[in-house]
Structure formats: C-alpha cells, structure tokens
Length: 346
View (cartoon, one colour):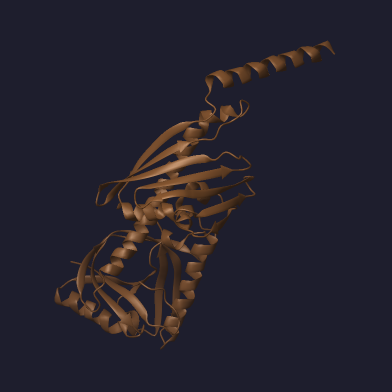
C-alpha cells in the first residue's frame, strides 16, 4: 500500500511538472510559414487550390489514405465552398471551408479536425515569379491546445511541411498532365505532316492480338481501352488528370495484315506495383517522329499512315512503330480523334 502511495505521489508530481512546463515553455498555438515554387503559371496553379475537387486529388492529406470518404458542397469552387471527410481506417474526420478568395492572389481556409471546435487557419498566397513560375506561401495558425495536448505543437510544423512536400510532387504531376493535354489540343492541325521530338514515356497497358476485319479491330480497341482505363482509374485509384492520353503502339504497316498485334497503354508518371498479370509497363524511348493529326472513322486513318510512311521513304529514313494517341477516348460507333506518330531514324 505504501509503494502505491509513493507511485501516486510520483505520478502527480510528474504530471504537475509536465503541465507546468507545457504551460510556461510551449505556446498554446503555433504560427509558421511554408514557401514553395512551381513551374506553372499562377492561373493554372490557383485553379488547383480554389476548386476543392481538384484540391483533394493532389493534396497528400487526402490522397494518402485509401479509406477516406469525402463529400463536396456547393458552390464547389471559391469562397463558400466546403467539404467534409471521414477516414475510418485512421479514425479521423473533419470539415474544410474556403472563407475568402482573391482570384489568383489569396485563399483563406478553415480546417476543423475531429471534434475540435477551434479551426486550423491556413492563408495561401500566390505570387507570379514569371509567366511560367509561381511562388506559393502558406501561412498557418494552429488552434489553441490544452496543456495536456500542447506537446503536439512540437511536431505540427514538421508534419505540415512533410505533407506539403509530398503534395507538391502530386501537384506537379497533375499540372503536367493538364498542361500537356491543353497544349496538345491547342497545337492540333489536322492532315498536316509535322516533325516532332517526343520525350520518353511510361505506359501501363496490355498486349493484344486480334483479327483485322472491318469494324472488328476498332471494337476490340474500344473494349481493351475500357479495360485499361477501368484498371487505372478504379483499381489503381488514379484520377483523369493524373495520367495522359491513351496510346496504341503497333507496327507501322500492319494495317495490311489479317491479324494485328498492338500494345494499348495509358501514360503514368512513375512505376507502381501492379498485381494483375494482364497489365504491364512499357517504356517508350525518346524519338524523332513524323506526325499527323487525323479525325474521322478509324478505318480512314490508313491513308494518313501511308502518307507518313511515304514521307519517311522519300527522306530515306528508316521507321519503327506507329503510335496512335487518342486525343478523345475511343468509343464504339463514333469517329476517332488521333495523333499518329511514326518514329523515324537514319
């Protein structure tokens, strides 16, 4: 019994010492600033912050958990928009609001975590450094904590900074895909032959062999595109702005063959673990390409491919495979919108 009393006294003294040290030496809330730069124009960057549906697709706080469930509330974008979330695996929930917006300059967020009635306040400022570069500055004010929880302030800033570092990687990938798609759409000149240098790509897709019969080939492509798209978007949980346009790779002149073999894949930014053996990664090396954009029936693409091959032969260039990039997703019974790229070399 005496030992129990002694232990009780020690615990009380330690608790008192802890409470006193927290009260006198640790602030009840924290203020800190995080700055980052990103190589995209301010209007593109701001749109990823003031639209909360965009925001939750790249912010690591939301993307890092496969079990988080998010509800979005109108107006979905700008001042007054809000979300609520529940994450049963991590036993957390909360609400987030945009309280103020100054277009392309400032946003003010409020984040209520778990059952804390005091929000974390985050002001984000956007400063254009150049036409293609933006500085993002986070000003963070954490809620007041009781003396017993005040120890959390020791790691709050580090945790927030780590989340931003991971989020910036996601944001760069997301913006890269968006800008690439916008640039490709803006640069389209149909039926004109051009020369392009293409960077390397990483495709996740499937290998296919099928009969080259009228309409049957395109139906097969649509079916396999849907397989790849569903796997990437549902099984891997990727959003549309996290990957590029689907690419079909095949021999340049196999349109004459009775059977066609092709690889159909979707560009991803990096390799990830894939458990389904039907899907595999293929690296596409940098190359010089003869390029034509084509819009019409899938069967009608053959004339454009022939023009690319004729151009290569005229220039005494050897050629490799043909890449068919679907600018619009392939759908049965509809015309295609294609970028045809023939890789050439001396």
